[in-house]
Length: 65
Image (cartoon, rainbow, N blue to C red):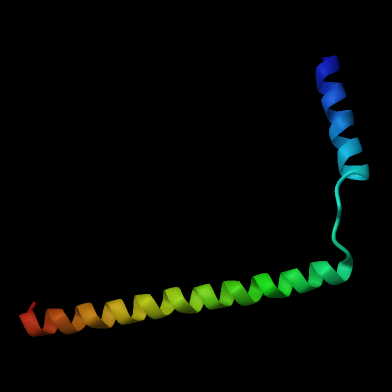
């Protein structure tokens, strides 16, 4: 049981003293970047899905199915 307690204490100490946490401004900037990237990736996937659906619908109409 002392190994678990030692692990928790060392993890707490590392999080408190050794980890470099971002400032509030850095956190806001990176959050905006992530949201913009998420929007772009979502738009690309939506576009691919839309084009793929229309191409397949066109092909099915040509083939008469």
